[in-house]
Image 1: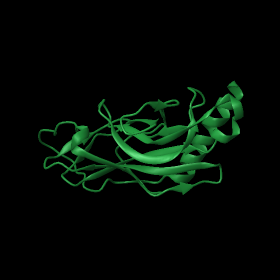
Image 2 (image 1 turned 90 degrees about the vertical axis):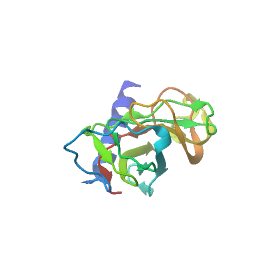
Image 3 (image 1 turned 180 degrees about the vertical axis):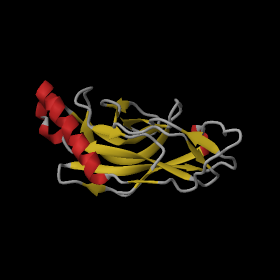
Image 4 (image 1 turned 135 degrees about the horizontal axis):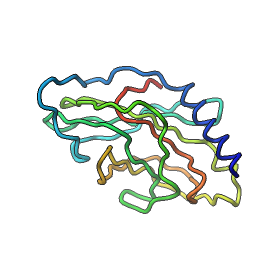
Length: 178
């Protein structure tokens, strides 16, 4: 099992390297005066970007954070991401692991956007009885440092066990070109 875990981590690293290019965030800017407060979940619209499949059986997407409030706010760090049975419903399987990346504070002007990389491993069907599959409605996403979640539709069948971890997320802050 340890060998399988290492090969999954290596596959994630390969997929991330194959699918990600860094760029600057749209609607973000440097601030030399007082830094705005962290973005509340209620101030954001969170959505999935375009899907990209890699040759390794992974699916990459951007997780887009858009400031829908009338004031600038900041994001820094990793969002929490997990599969759910329904908006506000139960968690299915393990929460997303962290894909290594540089953490930066991003200031989002009203209407500004930041992104995080979301990688879904296409492996649940290879685990047979060791990983019972369960129908999911989508994702629960909590911005960095927040507990309140925004729910994003992404129907499918996912591993209901705590291992293996079949989803990974990078830090918010840089735009992801996928």
